[in-house]
Length: 116
Image 1: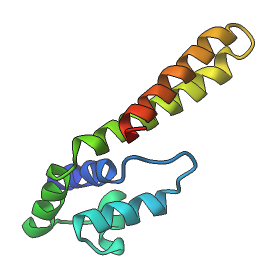
Image 2: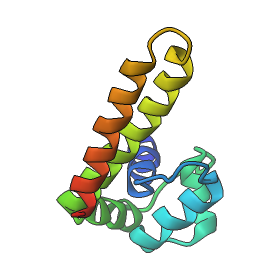
Image 3: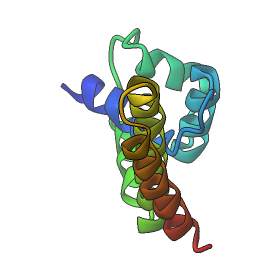
Image 4: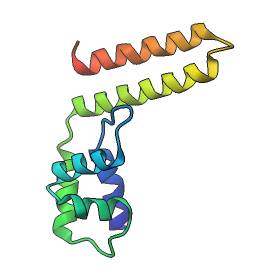
């Protein structure tokens, strides 16, 4: 179970994920935050690691615990923007007003998260 926890925690450390961000960039970002090598983070990310040292797991847990509320708000705003864009594609022909409303909420969330 610690390997699964490590993989999930690394994914959380990679957030917020900008639109179009490559997995490799996400792994690099998570590795830096956790103080791991990119190769080791990649092995954990993809579940290729056979084991995890307690020190590595502790480093990942500590990095995750240091996430600030602002990081969480940025991640939530990025998620909302992605949802709004996806909904806009689905609703483009049927309900443009609802799609525009969702974009407005996502934009407001981003502004709030960045302090703008």
